[in-house]
Length: 450
Image (cartoon, rainbow, N blue to C red; front, side, top):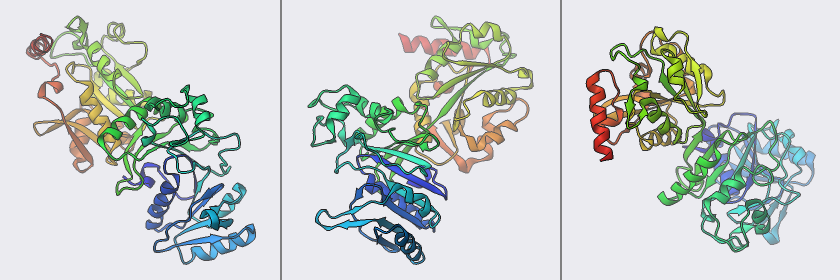
């Protein structure tokens, strides 16, 4: 996935990068991606940066005079798609000195996007900002805190961390202590850490950088799982800016909708309340869904709502579908109306699939985080189905469904937009329509627990 895709960059953006662990690399990678789209891009800093290794269509503009720098930038952008702009060259340090932050808004009138490195880290992978940092332009629309995953496992010292004493104060670690993943998570959502200086109106999307192997990815996922629900964060990116695939995963807000409104006509009694291993079936389903990385769980009730509600945990949101007799499509609409407006996708789960596993649902979520396709469906023996995840761009299609049809119809209609996730075994997707189905699940549960 490209950086510009994961960050949802659009024309007119001012993107401010803060933190440590590859800001300059991220800035130039993003700048080149946007330039390849035909955009005019200005990369600059409000502190100091190293000069870029210029590629085709790139140039450096240096002037301490604000009027002249605007004129030179405008002229240079006629011939080059990506320019790096600075106030001064510091030859002894091989650095470019930054511009005043107030100048950024004027630069935006010349370019399609401006990318700003808004603090320094002296090449370290982790930092906490000093009192005078970061220097974030007020025109910033996208705020990107960066950390290097390679800081995990290092000792809290000057070798790996810029301003280790400040990091110690914010994380509760002692100097010289080994840095755990939880410390990066705390820094990324701390108002005096990575969020310091973030404008209230800017989108905030942290980037966990330098993730280049399976072990680093597992640690990064652990961090993302801890922080992605934090109110200021829109998305959490995981990747390695220096590689051909700079973003491996883009963690987005996902709401789970558990469909539990049906009358169980073919079975005769509410399937949701059938006993299984000492609990109602819906309790097993909700226990599994709540253990995943979804941001909220919405349960759609209809027939026998009062009885079923007694088995719904307090941290799940219940919504009553007044039109449940119209079929599953009405429950889909009721669920979509009830979810958090910030959710970028929904994960649909049936209330009568008690053998679904956390691992299976997590694979669906992780597949979504790693793709730009809008549907992720579970698959078994060549058949795609539910549980399945749908991106917000398909919400209108879901809301237009009529009768007793659900997400499978959308999956069948848009096969080229689907990523399939193979489940471990067929029984994971078993649901209950008949007494025979129920007996089969009871027997399988006994086998699994014996």
